[in-house]
Amino acid sequence: MSASVFVGSLRLDVPLVNASGVIDHVSDVDDWNLPASVLGVLGAFVTKTITARPRAGNPQPWAETMAPAGTLVNAAGLPNPGIDRVIVEWANLPDALGVPVIASIGGDVDSLPELARRLHDASWASAIELNLSCPNVDGGLVASDAAAVERAVTAVRSATNLPLLAKLTPACGAPASVARAAQAAGADALTCCNTMPVRAFASDGSPLLGAGADGGLSGTGLHPISVRVVAQVADAVDLPVVGLGGVDSIAAARRMLDAGARIVGVGTGALFDPGLIADLARTLATDKSSTAR
Image (tube, rainbow, N blue to C red; front, side, top):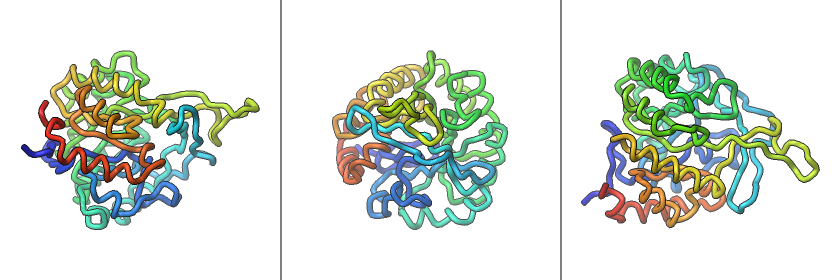
């Protein structure tokens, strides 16, 4: 039995991906980057979210630690060089990393079909992830509304036949309904989930982040919420689910699989422990139970 998983036509030899934007290879901020020797064991690499125009991101600091240990609150604001530069400058990522690349796109929902079309034509992206759930930019959090998700996925599906993953939010009262809407519109997989919108303050009462008090919770503190969303979504649809949020150990990855995920996503956990990626890849490549669903 193989541990590989298909997302549409994309085959992941190891059912493991990174969280978009949390760990990177081409960030302007070196603290977020990991080398190809670390990222090359993934089943696929997910880029930071690409927008139509360049974005500098929110004011620094973008991220700060919180309790419990292994938890971050962040509000980077989708920093990226914009689609014009990305098309050229990131074209070498598949060769540099040695794994398929999933291009994350987001920002203005109306721009998503054109972003998808341009990435399709560029030919270096093996799939597209629709970031419909960023809480740190205006208009970025549409994944709590099933009708809005269906419109966005339908529009992108009409622009490309590349495999599509829709990235959902834990800030939703009916994740099963949103998941069914994404499936009906043509999504090939669902990523569960993005950060949880929170407010974070320093001990003196001042906002913890440069963008203000509002940010997104990731890491260990998000894990039990993400496991719940994964379970509800996996029960609702017949699509591969990427279980993402607080995967900081082999045990956490197995909780995602037990909840119904077919693919595990790792982000903040690898910032604290880059060796976690290799540990997860080794385990998931040989754990036959990960494909028996």
